[in-house]
Image 1 (cartoon, one colour):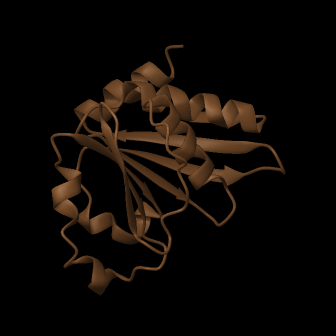
Image 2 (cartoon, one colour):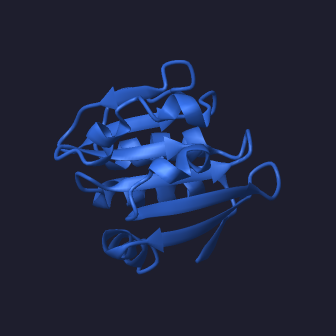
Length: 151
């Protein structure tokens, strides 16, 4: 399903809506070029989850953890190559019983991702406009997608 964000506020509202409905074990995969708004969307997801901490890019630390009722495990695998990712223990996060994962540049580790995940491909249309192509891959991600487009 496609969604057009006309402004930064639209993008933040989308992220907050996603964050509000996340449960432990949910996987959100963000895919898009540099500057398309992956970290901005992640920040809004965190806000929707009730996280008060400042969420920043995880590029140089790979994974950042934020704690709330449902924890957020924020991955940025931009600098990771496939052979490195096989040994990092991502499964501990992906199948966590206390947190949800948001993975920037998820297409770089596609072979490692759980089957049930929500993929969000972000395309920059203009300075403020973005196209979100959102695809559910699994039963739980279908539920999330249904909530996103029901409001």
